[in-house]
Length: 231
Image 1 (spheres, one colour):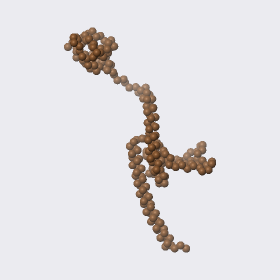
Image 2 (cartoon, rainbow, N blue to C red):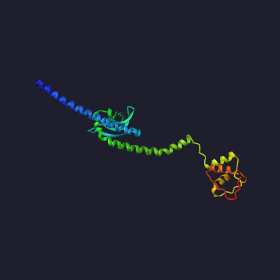
Image 3 (cartoon, rainbow, N blue to C red):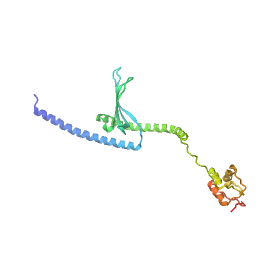
Image 4 (cartoon, rainbow, N blue to C red):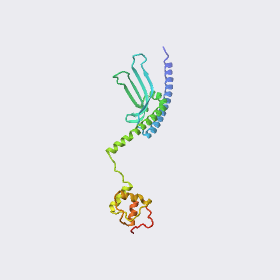
């Protein structure tokens, strides 16, 4: 028959050792959770909104005909309504009609054993996120032209008036035309715009009106010697 005293001492010693190990384990686990939270915070600032997974482990049937599988994955996804680093387990049968059992957790809410196995996959996850973000960006750029074309049809924007249009509008409002002014290269744009509009260039208008019209067309005419301009 075992000695009760010896049994109590053995249990007491083992429990003290377990308490010490458990305290250390909890401290390390809390530190890990804090580090993951800091990575999470950095990723949230990037506002990615992209789901990506990398495999942590896979178990399949060892015998021919055994279709059972179990997969553990580390990823960046939305779980419980929140974006963050997450862990997922998928269990099922690799056969038609089977609906796998999928569980998804935010990292710090997953079973400790799963968290420990997934730590070494964090660099791979960040690389996968970068690759997926680049892929999505390229796809969006390819669709941008099509979306803009559709938007132009559905919601056309008014065309901004050109310099020439502004000039013709000014002439129409003031009901004046350039007259008695010999065109030269420096105010050729002004003269051409008026001719294209069918305006009469044989009358005289005040010099101030000409300068105002020229300003509307971003033309700064230089009045040649001998030009007849009404003051």
